[in-house]
Image (cartoon, rainbow, N blue to C red; front, side):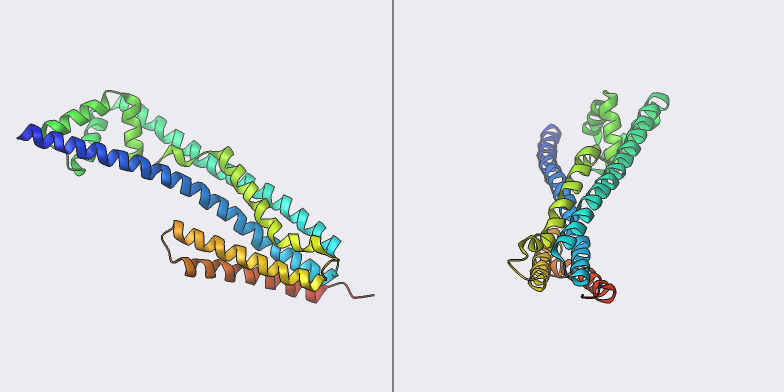
Length: 252
């Protein structure tokens, strides 16, 4: 009866592990999507304020486009660099912690082994099954260290890819930045005033959609999240508009 109970527990544990594995991949995919939304959002907000301010102040589509493009590429490179260095710092911290765990496994193996036992006791393991699990994990130092990293320190290496993260944030910032800039390429087919209104409308729509998606990813109310991001974007655009109106170049 005890063996049957242990077998059932092992099967349940395997099923839970498979479920965790799938959820972990979903979380990782969601993390990259959040990074993409973050970059897009910043691109839309910052360039909206700049192009509306410049357009209002100069009433010139070429100057507005020039300013928008300069801001787009300067900001995207800056954001990519920040994302890269931030992610690299996290990855370096993870590596240092893992090396520390491997060192402790070498120097104080009995204490580290007891920590593994305590971790799995809290998970509900006991008796021979607990002994077998502890023995299995501690038979491989890499598995042992990885288990300590996840279950004791709550650190995951998969969350850190500096190059990929920097690329995603930089690219998404460019994509987002072009949203409020595109209407000014339509001048003189449309007036500067119409380009400004269209730019504001596209930026607002993009921000609301990104906020709603972000809300869904973080289990928040989609409408509330969308409106929050929209309000932030509108405030930035309004600030740029006011600066352009106040410091604008006088008409000839």
